[in-house]
Every structure is written in structure tokens, then in C-alpha cells.
Image 1 (cartoon, rainbow, N blue to C red):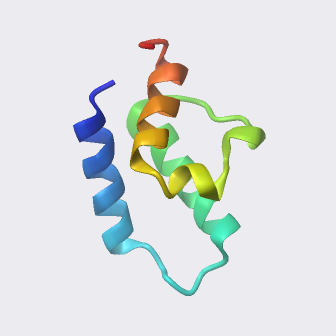
Image 2 (image 1 turned 90 degrees about the vertical axis):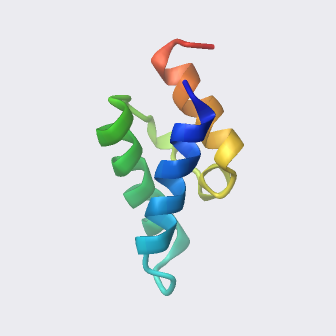
Length: 69
């Protein structure tokens, strides 16, 4: 998985997200976006606000889920 693409998607999402929303709800929204854009399925345990705050961690997660690690 190309980290640049993941980081661009996250930057675009960050520009549109609601700042006053609960972090866990925002993590669910980010998870849905990742599932739709990168055609992966995240488990409940993988939906972690701390992971979604780090583009490198998200890129690694997407790569692992897509089997490209």
C-alpha cells in the first residue's frame, strides 16, 4: 500500500471532519472511509482513535489488511 495515497486520503478527510465530535465516533467515520476507499474490513478492535491519528499507523494497518505487508 502506498503510504502517500493513505496520507492524502487522511489529509482530505481531516479537512472535512467535524472537530467537535466525539473522538470514538470520529474513529468510526474514519474506519468507514478506509473500508470504502481501500476495500478492507476493519474489526472493532482495529477501530482505534490513536491509530487513526497517526498516518503511518493507518498506512501500515491498511497494508496489513490488504495483505501487502
